[in-house]
Length: 121
Image (cartoon, rainbow, N blue to C red; front, side, top):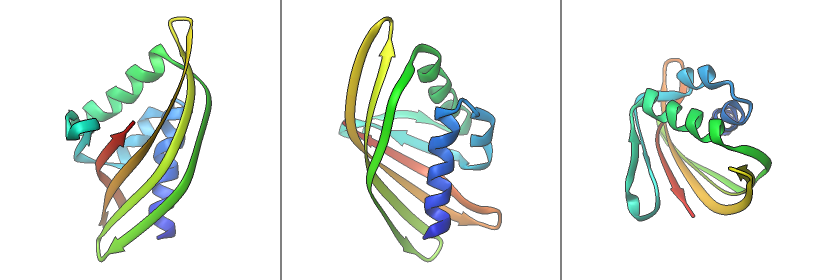
């Protein structure tokens, strides 16, 4: 479970620090990201990375925190969940959002890869 949590932390550190190239080794080629109502937001590694790039291009993250982490594993599958709070600025306006994320990971020969992300607000 520690390796799953380390992978999750690396994903969130990479986008917050704008090290988007690091996401190539953390996300599966066919990752799917869904949002509220299980609406598909993006599909595929490059589209997912681009969604992080676009958010950070138009946002200044002022504060970001995570709590209530949980990781469950079944063989080569793991699910990580957590609550998050983020204060950010876009177009001169400051907003604070709260939500939950769920990542599903698959263990590969090179480590754990995120194959699915669900974002709930």
